[in-house]
Length: 525
Image 1 (tube, helix red, strand yellow):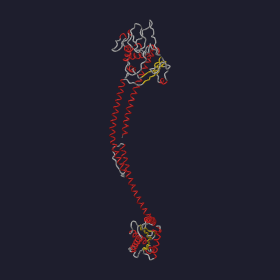
Image 2 (cartoon, rainbow, N blue to C red; image 1 turned 180 degrees about the horizontal axis):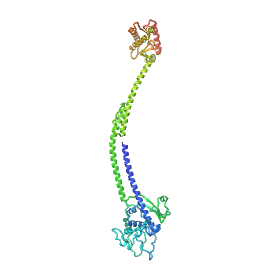
Image 3 (cartoon, one colour; image 1 turned 180 degrees about the vertical axis):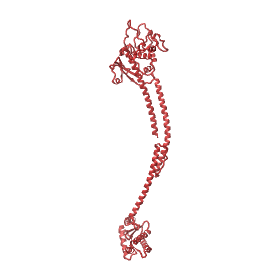
Image 4 (cartoon, rainbow, N blue to C red; image 1 turned 120 degrees about the vertical axis):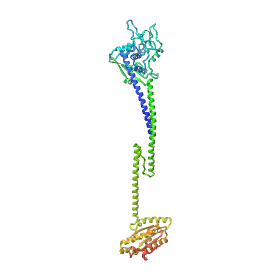
């Protein structure tokens, strides 16, 4: 959740920053284009009016020409754009040449026409278009009929001749002529007439002017006059064409310094973006809290359910609310839990069945099918273990071998079914009188073996004699009226024989002695 909130806040900040950068970049681009278009417009008119750069700067300065043209045309956009353009060097005109050296004023001869008035030095209309009466009315009355200057403006020179406000180094007037105001006052007046560029700093756009051979004529404080224009500046240079030939190349350089109005606009944009970012932040936090509560509730339930499943309770149910991704996750978890519980139940049942079958198989492998007693293989394995324990701990152990007397005659006289019934009943009598630690097995045919751990020879002999009496006294007439069954036994308790097999061999020898001495008896040694 923290990552989601951080991502949302970062996205809001990024969008706001990109929007602000985009707005400022767009303002810079528009302002640069406007300044370039106005500079190109007036530079083309300036050079076109006088036929070339050299003739133009000898006639009047471009700065004065542009300001005069803007005032005569009433071009407010041009006035704003002119504040974004670095002014030309002061005095570049009649008394300062393109190389920066002073030029003598041209001598006036008798019969020469008076100097052109400012209204007659406007840019020529494009494509030979002549101005109509409306233009004459827009120009206003002649200089001698114009009203006096407004408060704070510097009055013009005597005789109606207007001095160049940018001419700071022009030669003095003829003897006896009235001098104009000092240079500081003219500069202040010039600064009052030029619009403020926003911060009182240098204009942001400097236009470099080069001739047709790409040699700098105006370096704008970046290049020196006569210096070749670099190739990088030539690529973006714009040609000024006069009478079908290229007279100049203009290259713009500089960075954005917003005006006061532009700065106010940018400040308003920034404040709006900040307010939007703050509102987006509050909204993101509010939504984050609401979403986190719903998500945390469901995720907590899922976590508890997973822990319960880990503890063994596989069947879990998590409440599903809504149709979002978390609800889909809860639904999938419920389905998975149900399937796991069902599969686990089936697996457990199958496992129990397998265990039961394995136990049955194990019992079948160690049990005699007829008497349900252990078989010979199992008895031999367990007898070895019991013998080793008795030897290790020096404890008594007795092994017994018993055989039903005249069993073959029972099968021949009463049938094999009667013989099987006799074997089952003898097995029941032997198993019914054994301890849990004792081991009884059918050794083969009518022979039975017994292992009596922790039992010395006297106790073993007494137990065998009791078993013999129980077998003899059983009501065999219930099986067949003429049936009688007895058993002979041999008992060995000598662990010094060395092995369980050796003890069984001694017990077998004692069994044969019991058979030879009349049967239905117990022999031991």
